[in-house]
Length: 252
Image (cartoon, rainbow, N blue to C red; front, top):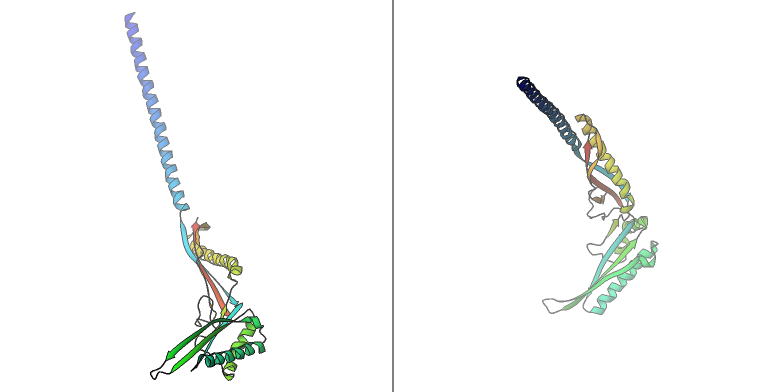
């Protein structure tokens, strides 16, 4: 009876060990499968992340020709004499001639405004004293054609005895930049996307959404080149507005 009991105990012990071994092997197999699946998922996720982070940086350009809508003309002139009253009288005469000139061209009286006056006193080597009166008046108008006509006829002022000082000239300015900004930014963005699509085509990719974008700055210049002005001011009313955008597009 004790022999049977011992045999039964041994049999149960062997069976228990086999069961533990089986469970351990099963757990190891499940763990191995999990590691394989997890590694695959991790690798695939990294690849997807790398694909999602692929991007191309391109620039887009938009240009538009416009006509200035504001003309300003600062006219400087002066007169010198041995006494202040005579010099001032000469400047007053020139001022009257200038006002008559612009009135004859059809400008309203308030289009011309005085912007400054300066008086200097000088003594030469012989002790002779002279006075110089320098006057500035400014024309401001939105009538561009009339302003151009005034520039073409400015020599008439010389015929009237008015000597214009250096720096007297018409400046044309385009002031409605904000009105065309949205359309120009959209055009520059479309130009950038076209460049990105060409790049994607060459690399076997497709263009996705915008990752980052920088509008850049707008410039207003003379249409036919620099005419001596800056920021949209020069001696021509015909301007070219330009904007360059820099955009990062996702590739997929």
